[in-house]
Length: 170
Ligand SMILES: [Zn+2]
Image (cartoon, rainbow, N blue to C red; front, side, top):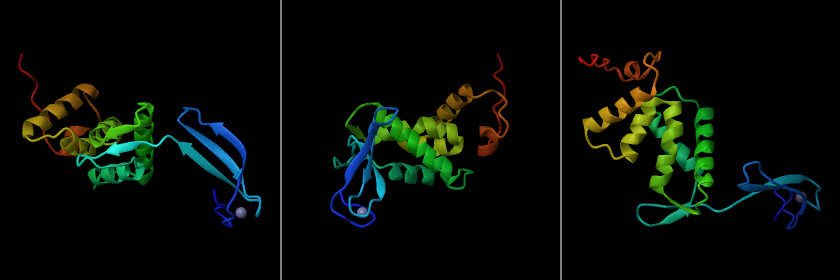
């Protein structure tokens, strides 16, 4: 490939190693003309099949853009979004599939997003799990409550501004 510094049309591989997770190869290259070094990363191409049937390469930045929308107004940093994007990409690559649907990608986002921000998670889940009624939200919130310790400071109830349900009378 072309040298990214001087555009010389050739480069020499000086080192090549597989990453720890085995999903990519990093090559250290040197330009024979200007002598500068650069790194390339080789990964298996991962295609995403959209609902329309069109396929496009998996894009971490598209994942992050979608999640950023769900995180609007939430205390979520760009760093945290970048980490989430990385976790999602690792998860979908770890499936070993060469092709995924947008739905599979959405499902892979849910776990990391739940760890990041519960309100953003509910917004996102409402789309990907096709919530169409208040009951669907209630079910999802109940699921989350069951996973959370009973007294989470700044937890879901506070964030959503809804009162906690009265204890079941049994
Ligand atoms: Zn060069």
